[in-house]
Amino acid sequence: MRNSSVALKLLNTFAIDVRARSIVTAHSESELLKLWWKASERNQPILVLGGGSNVLFLENYLGTVLLNRINGIKISEDTEAWYVHVNAGEIWHNLVNICLDRRMPGLENLAMIPGYVGSAPIQNIGAYGVELKQVCEYVDIIQLETGTKIRLSAVDCQFGYRESIFKHDLREHNVIVSVCLRLTKDWKPVLNYGDLTRFNAQQVTPRQIYEMVCKMRRNKLPDPTLVGNAGSFFKNPIIDSSEAKDLLHRYPDVPYYPQLDGRVKLAAGWLIDHCGLKGYKLGGAALHDEQALILINTGKANGSDIVSLARYIRRKIADQFSIWLEPEVRFISALGEVDAKGVVS
Image: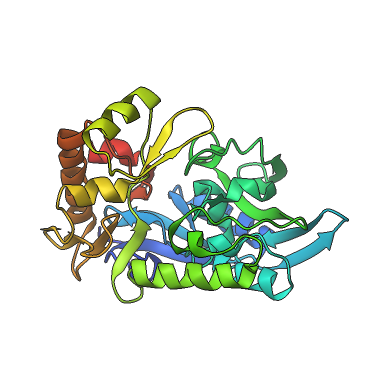
């Protein structure tokens, strides 16, 4: 790509060595609109990016990357809850720390999730039994073509498992500028996963949960500043109860989590590990040798290497379990986001 002159390697945690025509940074809503319109007038594609922690660049980007760095946090409260209105350019993990330091629990299970607040609703981020949708009060967006600001309730956001309206109907020409979280004062610990199950629910503190979550993530996940990765690459599959019954009959030790709608969520990492794929390498990409859900850049991987490995894994899992894994990571082509599931099919 002849006119590409700005490196994106440090702006995506996969550390894929691609380039963009330009990178601009917005520190306010007015600046964001101004920069978007300026790029639009040049008829270039525009990608709004936070920390690049959940994206895979497939190739050089033919347009402008707009970094959303609108900062600011406002806190209010009533008798039942605290309301944390936080702008999109705040770092998520910093927000978790701020809330705990102010004795406002509720986000401790979501500690150390990389990225910025503006990206959190897109994926409906979640970890260790807690999802953003459980604490989201509303999300403010700006329609870039009109400059209109709209407030969406949590219901409007159509949150699902790693899903939201921002990945579909509102993917184009809309940008998240702030999120409001409702943290109830009637705090109850969520201790359903991993080492958290060892805690006594009557005695555990939010800080203890936070520290354990940080410890588990450090032990389990490679540091993206050292090893290029985007965290969990695949979603945990959710299957019908009849399929789950058959699977459990064949594999009694498969971890499973019943859902409210009667379906069953499975651990994608277990499925991959059971196929003996940990550490498997393909080109410059590899499966992490300790955590089967993590695809890594061994140093010189390009987007095609990661895609090829993901496609190989999907087919192995389908052959073994008749289950097709879906990527959690968003795929970015030369002109913008593309359907990740279609790319790896």
